[in-house]
Image (cartoon, rainbow over all chains, first blue to last red):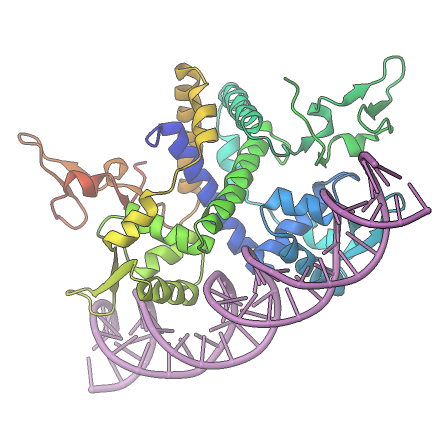
Length: 189
Length: 189
DNA sequence: CCCATCTAGTATCGAATCGAAACCGTATTG
DNA sequence: CAATACGGTTTCGATTCGATACTAGATGGG
């Protein structure tokens, strides 16, 4: 179905966003991949701040990721820390400097404006359709899905108090954790 | 509006498509940019097959585009031809070999499948909303919009016969031209 | 416990990307 | 005709990127 209008629109939007991302990152004096990595680190939860997760998420090779992280570290934008349990894995964190760098991204005002101009009902219905599309796509491939904890099959909300935990690891999750991207994310069927 | 669900979904889909494009192009033994350039050349009409148009469309610098085109030419996938009217501009065309290379791209079956699983009515309504979103975004920025001739303000359908022409250049357009991407594209108000 | 195997990550190499800036030839404007 | 703008190319240095080889830690038999 190469000529489906929805297919074309999504492709076109993706291309436009990519083109803009390129220009935005170089305006910040930084390669696109660095920008993506910093943004990912800001959005990732504590299970997902490893090189392997970034490799899967961004579709790069581990060599590229390793090299880029080394560079970002030398610039003082991220720090690394070995995992205590599995001493092979490295965990990365944004430094205050790195977080500030991300924070000063103005985003795309034009984009936000165009979005705000749409009627709320249309936004919601389109979001519902795209959500199903994304879910269908994720289910059709066997790889990792990447999503926030709240939408995960493993997410457990504890009745009684407002606690929440991951059903996979059993660990409690803060609100911040539950709204971040997790590499163990699994779509409910 | 950083937490608008539609915003997040479109961003997420764009990221997934980009990640897939990376993997697909390297599976074809080619850098992503080469892949994008070949695809663009296939989709561009005769006003838009210049380095400058590709620079604008893909968000790269002209140096990068020039260098990549040189490489693609040396591999025999594209040919160049100077413009007769403006002797500064270069026009590029896919060779049969280059076209064949693009044609053997299997596309993304998983994606098509997920798309086909959606009800046609939902697809259409989501497409309508995304179309308005894209139009709003294009109108909000002063740059080029890039679109097919048929949707352009300059597009003139000649009543009586089935001829069609560009109101900007006055030249007649074939059906193939009218469904290709044009850099002079202008959204009707 | 030991060995094979797997996995996470790093190091290295070569080809190519990529942006910045300088440069050339052509068009356009005054 | 001069000044300026514009389309493209070239060159340079930093970085990406994939491929491959490698290290170290985990894991799973026997």
